[in-house]
Image 1 (cartoon, rainbow, N blue to C red):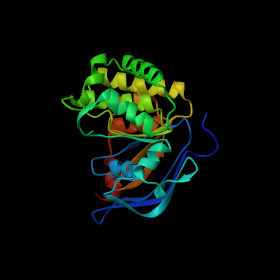
Image 2 (cartoon, rainbow, N blue to C red):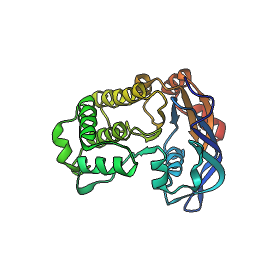
Image 3 (cartoon, rainbow, N blue to C red):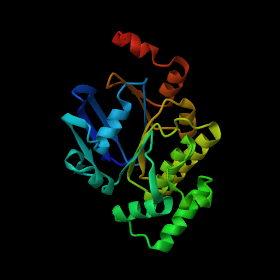
Image 4 (cartoon, rainbow, N blue to C red):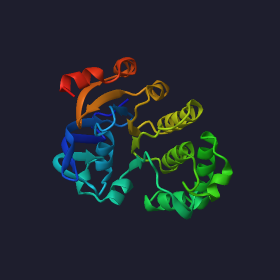
Length: 253
């Protein structure tokens, strides 16, 4: 069950990119153990919101407050946000040629000051790879180099399972996945929630099938940088049936 105090509290957040306002007055509370889903058409500001929370240098927060795990998130550098327990899974992960998956993940664990011996790290990596149905040969592959779209998304979830953050921001992690891969990714997320009941996530997605696999606690519709409606599974089903027509009509777009 969620605790009384939110893990993440966003109040009246306004974000600009290249002088244009892309997030307009968003307020959001995420309690430990909760899964929130943000849905909306392309260009609605969904990715801008989660990237601003992670500290993207091309996004400027000009108004609003963000508290995360008792800290003023906006005063922390991106690496400090990660060390505090915030994780961002990218929609389009970058390749890191010459750095193996194993070394990359171990460096990430060390940077986050996780107290794992090399043996404990090896065991955690092997368990997570088995869960995600990833071949052990991946350990020696360069990060995302030569990976298919689905493999890149699996690697993002593998990082999540290894690092075990307090809160994950998942930017269309399901994009480009077939149903089998989608199911594997959903299983990885559910396993992490089972192992760590306080783990929370904010998921950006268009895929209502993904929602049926994960059963989110809250669904939010974001349009033109603002949350237009919030609800539960019933709202997700309505979006699957009707799309975003009614919100576009109301806004005159």
